[in-house]
Image (cartoon, rainbow, N blue to C red; front, side, top):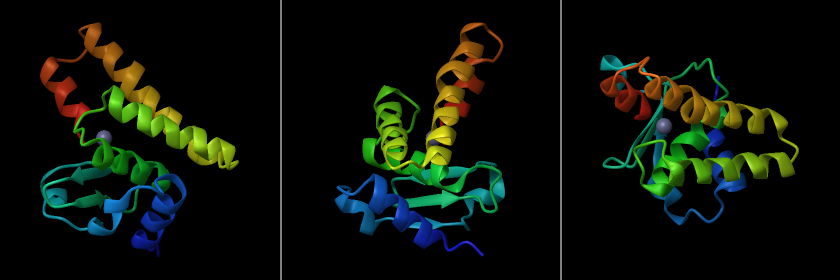
Length: 136
Ligand SMILES: [Zn+2]
């Protein structure tokens, strides 16, 4: 069994040590939203909650870091502010020789930066789908 709170604390301690508000946030794997929507992770600033959909196909620490970056940058979207902070986690992970985490973060960043943006610009996905997939 994964101790989600412990994993969250580890990510905060290592990659977001100056995030003072972290103790006000909760990380949960059960939430009413999960019954209506599919997502790997979600940041709900209004509730100071980060939801992680367990078990996940993705690398857990990258999802936790992804959602914390939304919390810290107060950005609901995968914009520059968000991706810069997220990329810093990848750089720090490399310094700490956690290549696994760095790899998964870069893969996630690529998905949003190139994949999605690219598909949208080529007209392969609608603006609605683009905006919808940028959330979460
Ligand atoms: Zn996101």
